[in-house]
Length: 597
Image (tube, rainbow, N blue to C red):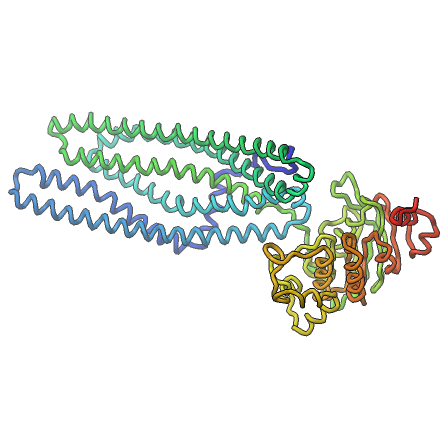
């Protein structure tokens, strides 16, 4: 479903079923089986300690407190011994509970660490088109809020749910051994409890799923609004943006209230059933005591066990909230993990021993929407070491050529060849190692200058200095307080557009690829910076096959050949002089740039 905020969010995912989800969740748990086993052993210890306490109370009442056959000293000694055992069991239960919390948190953190790593690694493998359709805010929600919900389930539910089920089963067994008639009377409430729980689980799943969906919408809107805050302020769109956020926030509030209403109905129902159980015990058990068919200790123990019986049921209601929220998150996480939108890879990838840098587009047709092709039947060839400039009006398909060459997308028809081999036959990493890309917008990592230049390359200090000098960055870096170790990016040194371009060229020189691509690299710089970039270009383009997308005449004139595009097709081709003399599209573009009508 599409909304008026520029992004897409699934309202309902394909039906996957609880069993399928639980299998995948438990697959992550299996890797920490030792810790889970330890938590289960501790869980059994906690359950054993808690179930023994009412039995001790029954013995204290029946065997000593109301037992007139024993003298006072014997009764007091018996009660004292049972009290000491009671205290030991309390301490043992506390220690086991403490250790279980530590083990579960340790396990949960490791499982979530692995899940977050898997999810982010999978995102990195997806093709660019996926990120065009899915806003950053939505994907951040998957990696943060949804993963955190899963963490709560691992630490608060999986083992403790086992603990509660063992406790409930143990209580039922003990009640049957104590008085099977009264236990049978209690079991009549179980179908009502199960019906109440199943109904709650279904309603809660839908409620939490809607909450997750709406939260992703809010995150997506916030990411878009805050990243474009300057545009919002320039065009005085604060009121409109506030209204849009108010609508999203109000919807989120209403969905949270709906979930609270569901929870508010479930808890009182459990309290009512608990009160009914106590009333039945008092009515039936009291009658049994009056008829001397049951002891007071058994009645007190029954009441204690019923309190213990409904306590995990109350906990289960809260854990159901966590489980349903977590399963809604799990649906989203696994749906993203199941997204198979990575570019296909060759079964036996090829690798070039020496790359010459010959590029050929052979009948390439491509559109971001298949019914609307951006480039049509595109055919051209760049020889090794040749420099080609691609020019054309906005929307002519120039940047699309770069996207296809870098294999951010695959052509709908036709082939792209590198040294006579289809680029699909290379691994993405091998292909992109051969291409150095300098774009108009340069991404700066929040790190030092050195780290931003070398990235993942091993570069000697001497080689790095040569790169910096060739990229015309020497004087700028030497003037920085910490030189190459100066932090840039978020919270660090701000760079001008020209400095970012020079940094991008330094990155290319460090990698030393055979192919260089310049995408409007000099369009947003002043004249002085352009002169530095021109010098850096001389070093960067030397001995490389270069493809330049530019409007500035000074940059275009470097080309051995100029390709003119219009509406996705090549309309003119030649050098600057011949194209100007042809008095076609190229001549008109240059005239417009120079202010000649």
